Image (cartoon, rainbow, N blue to C red; front, side):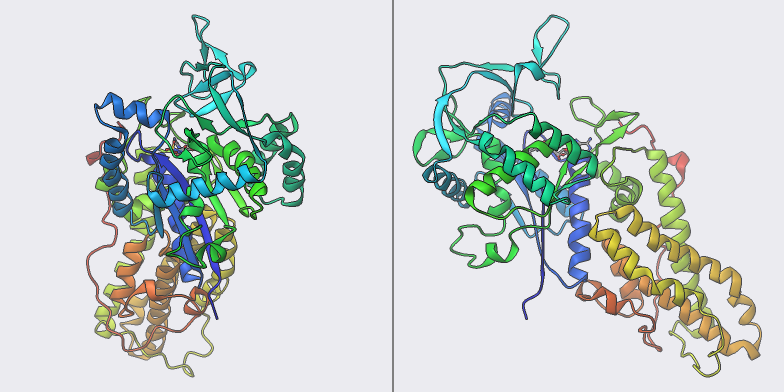
Length: 530
Ligand code: MSP
């Protein structure tokens, strides 16, 4: 039988700048889902990519004395390398300048043209190049000199003159269908605060949307009017379907298999595009709509949104250099509640690293593996079931409920809750060592059965924690699995079965190895985030 599918996207990132902590945050969240759903038996489609067209990228290229294409090509390694460094397992990386994507854009808009959803008209209004967004005058702000500025990025906006003829998409016709859709699909926009924002925005009325530009040519030409290129959002959103083989003769059946998707993961600043324009485009095309658009919050440093232009943006590589990839991933997923703005700081990263990874999880592994080496020559002990039948097994009990809690949390993309559940089991295991005192049991030959029982329980708990930590901290989980003599953790495709108690084979040789997370000395780290 074909596997069930699970499909989702990150935004298709603008290439005017290299990836930063904000874009890495969404991408890590998506990868955590990808890794979990694979372990949960799903066939995953995880689409990311680069948004290369539009005026912003063209301007950036010009500022670097390059053609737009040269600029985009020069940026590709920055994205691919960053995602490789962070162990991101996307299934497709779409560049919007690829011919296969131009085919999607042309096919899609031609279809809407033929269906009568487009018309040509004059547009006069305001445009922010940095946001690549049209604004009504009533939404603009003014700077100290009275110049209109963008309400989002506060940069001056451009007046688009009425001489420019554009193609318009009849977005206004979708006001009621969208409102009905939000009503009948309560999970479409999450978290709920963002849903309220979108419903109130759409309730105020929708204007038709200009989807083409003719004053510059850095974009996909519209097939029915070659002098026009698609507006950058009318282009980039479609990368989500290019990435699963829409209209691709080389990938038959794939689109039908993966569409509609489970999630689009986006930052809260781009939910209007995803929750208004995108579903209206899909409705017009007669395509089903993605199950959920999840608008996460912003990462804040010193109370402000991190951004390159404010000069407060650290690069992912800076943090990986200090903490390693797994701790980087774990920190952002466990400590910043997905959906809310979250303050990040080096101090807090060090704290989470030392408390949760070094002292709780890493220390558990070191202690148990070392004790087992001492007491059982590093072999997983054999438990005498009869002799230990009356012993309490609190770790088995605690582990039994983990799948349900964790699965529910991750289905809802509550990464913090899922990570906390695993952390609780690791903390419980450390407490179990204090309660059972294996070092005392080892001194008493009469307690040999009990010692084997205790050590087996600890090793088995470590095996189970490694499984559940794998989506968050893939390298260290793979290492623990390997040290337990269990082979390749990524081969696990049914985590529920694999995490059922008692599967660690007695007699496996356990390798002790170096600490997974050597403690960090806070005094030796530059905490400035600059
Ligand atoms: N190209 C569009 C997306 C097209 S999707 C079809 C775009 N690109 S972007 O490069 O600007 O993407 C930025 C993404 O990063 C957005 O989801 C945005 O919310 C996110 N972040 C940018 N700064 C951020 C923080 N400080 N914190 C968290 N995420 C932030 O928009």
